[in-house]
Structures are given as structure tokens and as C-alpha cells.
Image (cartoon, rainbow, N blue to C red):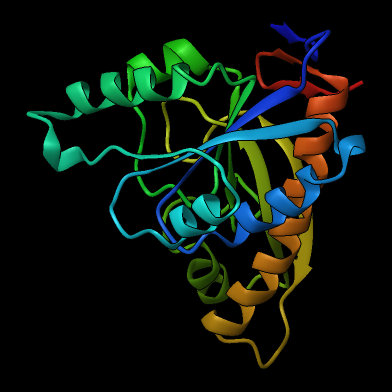
Length: 209
């Protein structure tokens, strides 16, 4: 599939999150510059009280919460989440620390337009404990990966990666924090590139002009 930036209107972003919203804050700062090429039109969360919702509200960005426990099953939640996001007509949906796996309805609607970040160099160390697993394995370099989400866990086509060296005195906390800094910069850079230039997705190959 090929996705081109829309003509005659701004490239629309919806961010999904579960936590404090540090990546969201970085994206908001970037979107202030018209040259960045994108507008953040909504922020959604899977829980009340997520810090990112407050950041969005203070910036005047519409927010919504869609909790799994408010639905009889995950499919119902997935369908409702899909509708809530679709109402904002996004060109790109960004998981910025969204701690829920979306389902088939969401991927059918937004497949090839939903990106996520992971705090290792995939395909190494997928899952919730990437930096810890990297340290335990003894790698000398890890990093962060930006990828299009598919039906697997951290298995989608890779957009970009950034390397982060592992220091001899690193523990999980220090390594995770350094990865977060690199991850945030990578996310901001590549969301801007996708917004301005578009992309082509063919199998596992992602091409940005």
C-alpha cells in the first residue's frame, strides 16, 4: 500500500496512550511548527487518570477514554475503540505507550497507518521487558524501534531504528531512561517525515521517499 500526504489539509494524528504522555508532549511541541507538517487532533487512553490526557486537555486537544472493563469482551472494546479513533479521521494513529493490544477491527481499519515504538532493536527482545531482557542477555548495543503494528506482538514492519550503547554500569532503570530519550527523538523525527512525505508499505518493507 502507498499512503500520500493529503492535499489541501493538514496531516491528522491521533495518539493512544496509557501513561504520563512524555512522547505525546514531544509530538505536541513538534506540531507547533507549521513546517512539521502534522496536526494532533485527538488523544485517547485505555484508563482514566492517564497523565497524557491532562497534557492533551491543557493543549486544547480533544480526549477520550475507552476502558476494556466497560465492555463484555475484547472484540467489543476493539470495535468501540476503532469507532472512537475513526471519528477523528486520522491519517496516522500513534501508540505512545498504549498498553493494550488492538484487535482485528482496529487493524482492518488502520492497518498500515498505526505505528508503535519498542525499547529494543527488534526482532530482539520483544514484549514488556525489553531492556531487562537485553541486559540479561549481555548485549553491547540495544536501542529503539518504530514499526507498523500488525496482529503479532512487536512483529510489524520496521520504519526506523536507533542504536543505544549498553554501558558496563547500566541497570534496567538507567538503560531504559537512555533508550526513552532516543526513542522519543526518533518518534518525533519519523512522524514528521511520514506526514510530509508519505510512505509505501510492501510486505515487511517500509519506504519513505
